[in-house]
Image (cartoon, rainbow, N blue to C red; front, side, top):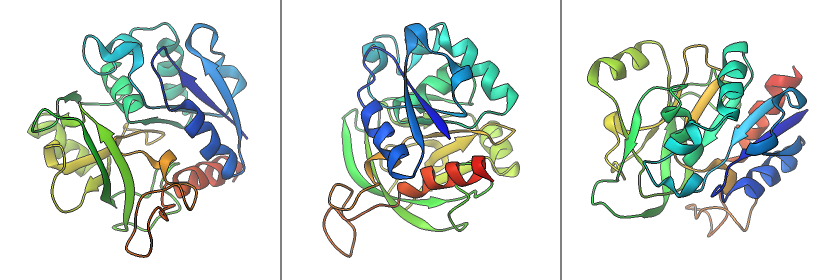
Length: 230
């Protein structure tokens, strides 16, 4: 299975996403925004970083870039798509996913190994988890506070579209402690913590068992491959 990794100027984490895909047994395909061909891939990852420097607001400039028209069409057609960190911000700014992002509570860059709870296992990226399972993923962002109105949040909850929530202290002040959501169809997911940084022992987050041992993020990519290859 070929999984595209769509990068923009300032996308820093594409190589990490490509490695995560490869470790799960997929074929990663680097896609540059200027010449991206989504017809050549079966699924899509939009990686983290600071696309176009986030000079307007997080993800806003990349959301207006030409390939996002193809991303919106692919999402509508059912392609599995995940936005990681800044990729989530891009999908939200493009209105492929609901909500928007503002600076974290405290107005500072946040770096933490964060516990999250998997709230939905019906997406292509979470089928390998148990509902309610708690995992640890790296979180790093300055504009990581997810914001949406109460009615929209209630609608997402009613539809089972809250994919993950922060456990314990809400690290960035996100409404409802939401860490990940999906679109209505369920094939598009945005997640603020970074599963691609938790795929290989010795390089992942700290866990109660050992330092740098966390590989919970690998199952997002395992889920994708299992779903598409089924």
